Length: 189
Image 1 (cartoon, helix red, strand yellow):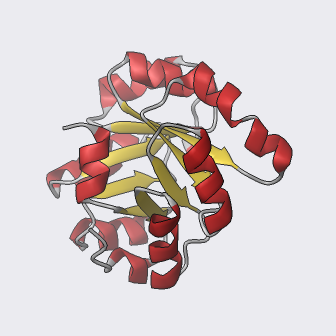
Image 2: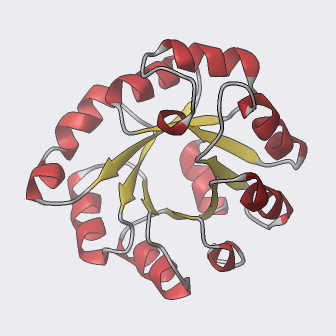
């Protein structure tokens, strides 16, 4: 299944930052779980819990404790986990993950006009499957990015409620990623 099909079918991504939220996410209706915590000793077990629940696991490699910022960590994740995708703010990590057959999400923080105008350069270097724009609660900026880049957009960060989620989707995002358990309950497809 392509990432566009996956995100279209399941536009709410449960982002988990600890074991407590992981347990809630695997029991939720969310089919995609973004792992924002863990270390090289427990990431295999975290991903295994997600996969045993029949869900897709995306690991934010930049937040994985005990790993380096080098591409070898992608190979490590391919060997020791059954993760479906990789999230990173680093173009080189996204590119390496894609070469290893992972779905790839390039996470981009849009803080000012410089970071907005730098999107093209970042995406050209990383060639991701999609991009995640943070903060995701800026509909005008999401619209600008949708016009600028021909990639699926995930709105992440500060997507705090149903209104934020629906506004992001209307503005051009294909999905939303959030740690807010109430938003996980929404049926947005």
